[in-house]
Length: 178
Image (cartoon, rainbow, N blue to C red; front, side):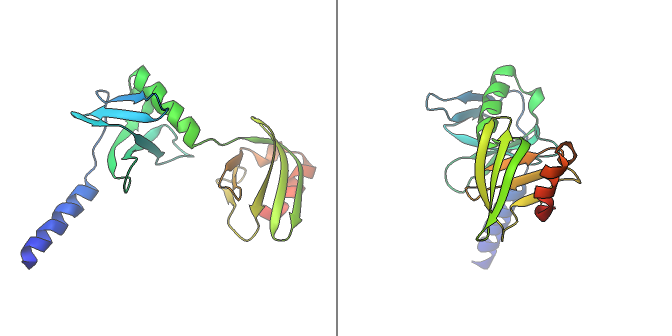
């Protein structure tokens, strides 16, 4: 009995650690409902999600393809998005754009600190925006000496690609986060 249980766990561990690469033969398509489907190795998945394993350093390499339902079991990994056929590549890029929507902040009009929250009024590449962050959390992450990711209270991400490109006044407003 104990040996059978051990075999089950070994089999499950092997399944969980196996890396399946997804190649050019896989077909990704946008469904009528706007989701992403996959046909690979004779299996059809009505809906899959794509997760960037290196979202900031290598955004289009090593993409994890996962089942949408259940525990999000990994189906496989796309090593390089540029190697995929054009139709699949476009469908994947569309899904990634929705998942990783990250406006880039180009100007800071104001940052006000009130009651444990910082209220930002900024200009982004997507237009003017106002958002709030919780000062008690790790809402501002330094990706490098000059690059920041800011996550607001609704888990939306904003990026400052180069703090040095901001005016001295704008950098002073950011001082409490650096």
